[in-house]
Image (cartoon, helix red, strand yellow):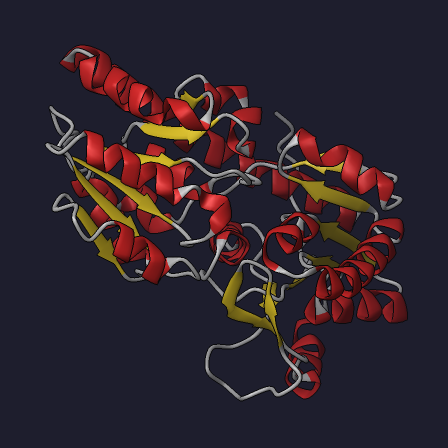
Length: 365
């Protein structure tokens, strides 16, 4: 492995329209910066702050109306950049913050990198009517083309996105791994349960997440408790559908330290999504030594070092059969799966951080 180190003057400014730790993208850069700090102390992210101001011009993000695209506070960003003096800019969303990052890099002739985490156009097909979708996608394609065509690198997290970013004019791409939260790594492990008593899901309660399949499984496996953690547009509908199921518990959105406790108390984690660019919550559960059942099309399966320790959900109709296979495993088989998942996830994290250090070292030369 290349073990190059950043120049001492290297400083990185990340720009994101996601709230810190609120979704996969927000969590990714929170974890990344925390892990990069020992090697690159001068890195900072510019993103919306929680509950700072009401923005009448904001619009909801497709699939997650609890987050909104807002106009950045340019004074706050200017003051932060003046202090940081970045040598590399990384824009991670095609919203207003990402665009500000690009414009700053262009003005000051700084190397610019963009990251493509989420195919928002797919989400608009699910959530928005044709009229709104047309204008949203016109904006998204325009900004994505601008960012990709002017980037030194376009960063993606699975090979399925290569065709998409090349259509935007990306010349150079790198497939990057995903970091883990430090407290997931440092917190003492909770012993792996010997039987399947509780299975959890964590994420948005939204159409693309296939949560209705979890309710079908709960109806079939009355001896297993199913914990569904999160908020989203389908919350009321799903609670109504599950009203007769005594083995289903809904929990509101948890912060990630609370979430790791719930993962530790569970025997396995489910992620049966239709659309999943990576699947960070499954990866994080692996790092806690828990078996995970993940839909075959999730981006995490693109990484062989992880996928061989994942129970893949071949199709939507097979969830009950897949859970049954997990139940029928011997204690030894289940412990081996858990231990291998634990080791693979932590090695993946280490390699990801080195991958970022190598990238930023290359771009600081």
